[in-house]
Amino acid sequence: MSIVYDFKENIKNDELEKVACVINKGGIVVFPTETVYGIGADATNDEAVANIFKAKGRPQDNPLIVHISDMEMLEDVAADVNDVERKLMDKFWPGPLTIILKAKENLSSRVTAGLPTVGIRMPDNKIALSIIRASNKPIAAPSANVSGRPSGTRLEDIYDELKANVDVFVDGGQTDIGIESTVLKVDEDGIVNILRPGRISLEDITKLGLKARLDKHIFADVKEGEKVESPGMKHRHYAPSTKTILLEYDNNENYMFEKVKKFVTNNNQKKIGIVCFDEHKNTYESMGIKCITIGSKDNLSEISKAIFSTLRYIDTLDIDVCIIQGVKKEEVGTAIMNRLLRACEYNIL
Ligand code: AMP
Ligand code: MG
Image 1 (cartoon, protein in one colour):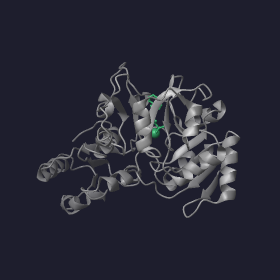
Image 2 (cartoon, rainbow, N blue to C red):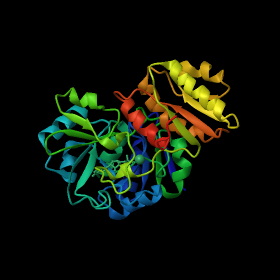
Image 3 (tube, rainbow, N blue to C red):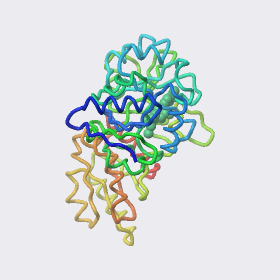
């Protein structure tokens, strides 16, 4: 049986010590960060890291992000930090940004999946930082979910699928941001290449006076045999068991309504659901379909926070197919669309 500690109201010191002890003995701890829950272990312990892969059923070639609590710990895990990387750290750490750096040898080679590089992040969450500090270890922690499933943003969503392989769950309530960190690599020409979009957007990075671009696989599937900058791009992600179809955002709302109406007419034998903006609920209900609201169309933060629990909720409904409303591909909308395209396995209405 795994232990559950409730840190929602406050971090209890005696329990924090126990969590640190579990990490130091090579155990597995699920804990909140500001993005999503992580499933973590000592990043320097081969066996502990192997157990994370086992618990998630994660492909061995997909490296883990290493979480640190301060710049001193950075020295233990990464080398050769350049000026652009330093500028990004100064501005965005602690925060939802993972930077791919040259890995140091004391990390388990399983963390890096054998690559010479490692993704490093300093999370902006009191519980996560306290656990890293108390154990005094860099903590490898991918998103806490079985591989392929939506990431976990509330402990109750992921407890059952992970409990057989986790020693301690730390409950910090619902995570703030709701989608995983931005992952980037600074290329040799000094240009910031965003490999996975997150709350820190391309716009946030260019505002610092840096040059940045989105990797071409952010909105496109990887073709057989194609080379990728980040192994995670190749793998199936976030998909509910229910068939889902993405409705791309259009400024002309009537155009979107017509598309849905046509789909409903052409599929009148099927039970159809739609994940939609609050503002569109009445319109879709009048078409006789089940509506699951995800937030206001003008509030992308609210939508990013709700995405993964909504994707899980779809599977609890008695529907055959679910349409999912897309958002504008700007600011954090880029990250939301990256997740939704994958959740819908690139099916577009
Ligand atoms: P997760 O741990 O589930 O949040 O996923 C981490 C993401 O970061 C995956 O898409 C990984 O492929 C990517 N990643 C981690 N380390 C590296 C690295 N050294 N080089 C490129 N991508 C990485
Ligand atoms: Mg993940």
